[in-house]
Amino acid sequence: MKEEQTFNSERALIYEKNSRISIPTYDTLFTMVQSYYRAQLSDKAASLLVIGAGGGNELAAWGPSNPQWTFTGIDISEEMLKIAKNKSVQLGLESRVKLIHGTIDDLPLPDSKFDAASCILVLHFIDDIQEKLKLLRTIKDHMKEGAPFVLVSAYGERDSAELRDRLNVWKSFWLDAGSDALKVNELVNKGIMKISFISENQIEGLLAESGFANITRFYSTGIFAGWICHAE
Ligand SMILES: C[S@@+](CC[C@H](N)C(=O)[O-])C[C@H]1O[C@@H](n2cnc3c(N)ncnc32)[C@H](O)[C@@H]1O
Image (tube, rainbow, N blue to C red; front, side):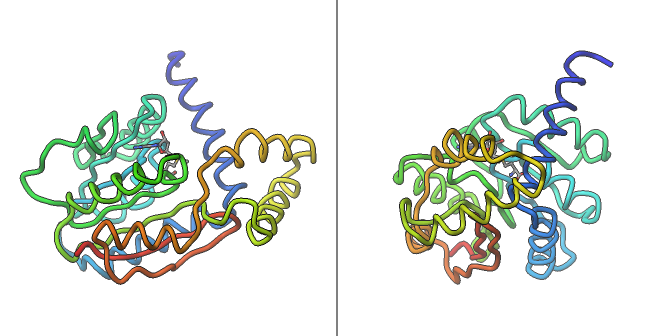
């Protein structure tokens, strides 16, 4: 096996394991989103835009059982995109998957707009509120009117007792998975507290300001939540 493949599979394994500790309902989330899209899109051919496609989990969860769907995945991490590429090859999805290295600004102007889009576990990595808004607005501009959008992000008022309680639940997932308290505190201080938390109201406000309607929270686990809505 080539070094690059070994590297990718090691990275992939760590990512797969850690995301399921951080979010014990991680796989269920993708199943729920698939059901939502299926209900919205019926059996028609549909183009899906996947923001933050690195790791390829959206492609793997939704690609094989929905042969009428095509995917455009965008990610700023070349390493993560390699994992997504490997996964799409392994699953025989290459003909239905296009991967773009960069941000949504690198997405070419479309011949036609997307039938659905997702932005799962990305928004909290963008610090600046105006940049978050710009991302959501640009996603919306690339979507057909009425198309379903799913956003999943960490959320909460930094320094609030409510977020502290949810962080303690998040820590308990890691402790139960066998990590010691020192390592878990380090994960919080070096990782979690560096991500950009904004409140649920702010997230819903950003979605509305970006041109999404019927905004509904459908999912919540630990420090993360998910919203469904439609491009106006
Ligand atoms: C936690 S991973 C989530 C990957 C995938 N959506 C999932 O749920 O398994 C976050 C991904 O978002 C990517 N990312 C961060 N900021 C981004 C941006 N502005 N545009 C596109 N991708 C971004 C990272 O490189 C990373 O691959």
